[in-house]
Length: 277
View 1 (cartoon, one colour):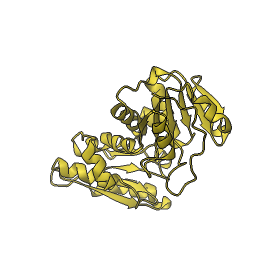
View 2: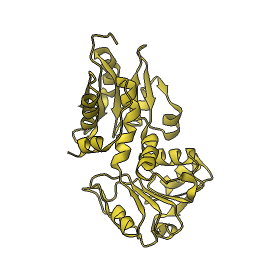
View 3: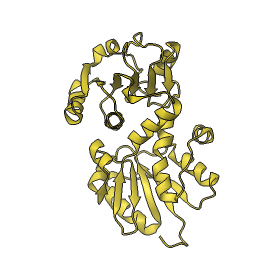
View 4: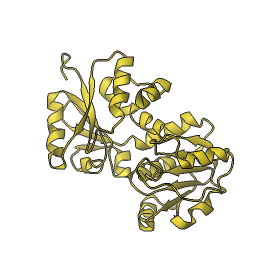
């Protein structure tokens, strides 16, 4: 990009008005005094490929990708990172100077960094990990947990077949547990993660029995609307270490911002406040 062009980035999805990413990136651009803008873009599916090819020509250095296009952009990108290939989806695109589109997935990175910041004593190898859900978010979480040394992941999903498919892809450290039995595998878990939308505003409640939770277990809910879900409330009452989902949103944004605007941003209370306001 020529030095007299202001770098542009943004987030592509449909719908997109709910996205908190523009607030976060605007906060970082202001905080570090950097030139640039970050724009939400509601792009129709039929125009996705054309839009992604056009954006670099008008000054865009990259975009985040959200629902429903995380898988679709994999077919459009020229280069795909190993972790995006493993997860089967991309959430961060970098438009290179030679015109090529590089696709990456930073969701797993964001998940692990959120755990490390919010629960500093957390260790993947501490014991069995229970993961609720087998969708796109679960794929990123499972891949990242295996990568940092999780010894055993107990995967449970309302549709068992999806969990079995994920196990077949990711290997022997994953055990599939029936959804109706999920409450019975919590008592010796070192970590519990909800990757489903259950408990989110406007979605059904998370109704798995949680009386098996024990003190000291790390419990993370990827849902961040509301910030304190039923899962986190009950985990807190059981004296677990709780980690809300907002931190994952903040941390997954760091690698993209650094590539696009040339500065590695801090995830701190001011960043959280900017997104929550």
